[in-house]
Length: 542
Image 1 (cartoon, rainbow, N blue to C red):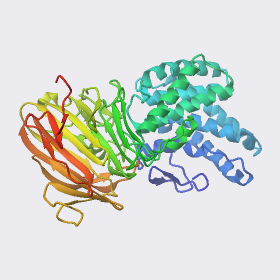
Image 2 (cartoon, rainbow, N blue to C red):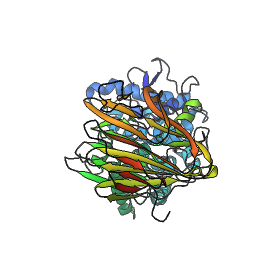
Image 3 (cartoon, rainbow, N blue to C red):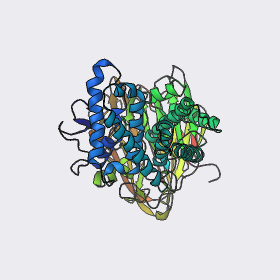
């Protein structure tokens, strides 16, 4: 990109090689932000053959200074400002001696002067109103500038950043290691930021009294990240998460001194992360994993990256993602952004056509669901996790979901809607584009064809999906957005029913080679019976 002047970012290309589109209303705002981050400069150009590219990199930075001179352009907003400051400083840190050899002293002086101006402006625009990952990026820019620039403000920047960082570590990193925005992508980004803080403090020989706190938060965040990964080694796409933005989980875990463990044969684990509200069921024999989101949309004062996904889940079988979240294709205000945040875009229930939360604009949330504390247990070899939310309490309904797993490959997702009144109930199950779904009776893979059974196939594997309860089901074409700017066609199983509460329902997923157990919902709606083993659908005492 440096060489050609054509910038491939988040699945879109801008720039024609002659003029860099630092501000362009024809390109998505997020694309413009990514260009202004200057992540493409965060590389080592110290080899002799790289010198022409190094010179072009300097020209790009100089072009930014010349064409972003009013302070009103997108690149002067605090978030892109913070990322660019760090990327430019890393560029000079890696390539400074080679830049000196180019004889471009005037250009270098101009760029360092611009960096000082950028940091001074950022210092006046710290994002206390947004806090969260935005404020951490601001703090990172202050501390990098305080350590690496040579101006009389450096000490002030360092001390201000260090004081804010200590405060934010306590606020943003939960007791179970999760980042409080509950977005795996931003969790990974924050972990990388903390690793950079640790390296910076160590390299500067300027220790802070609370370095042990920073090390502990890094360890906890790395453990959390390792716990939630799918068998393919990637993050779940819950809330505002996509692939290709944060550094890979494997790299982050290695840098944190916590190499990624691979599930071996016989490994079985149910991991509950109570403060974040996630539960993970991992089966090493089949290389399968279910990630269950029972937590709030985010911190009460900043749920902007939250989606209507309470009690949603993602399921991988034999390393293949099978049931997936929709992901995020855009942050632009519009129908696409609204859908990707809505209840219908997640593997959960919708009541009377209403979303779990009152989402509006691109990052706004009004009413949001209160959630119960996640719990787990085991009954005669059946492992279960359970969560509940009160997002539909204003409609007279409370949603509780219990996920049951048996080590022979049986998965059951059981829902209870308690309350009163007659309601329309919709359930959504979104499949990965690589998964084929067909009603039993239309293919040879169905052992007992009937209208309530579906065959799920991927690679050489075939599973049965059996629906239990009184609902109508049909397949719809929707989209999957694993990256910004990318939408892929996929299938969604959409169930609908109308009825008086309370009501319960379930779906069973199991290998086609395994006999379907006797599964019944009890008449009082409070339990599911699996081969005469009762699993309660409500917490004890409810």
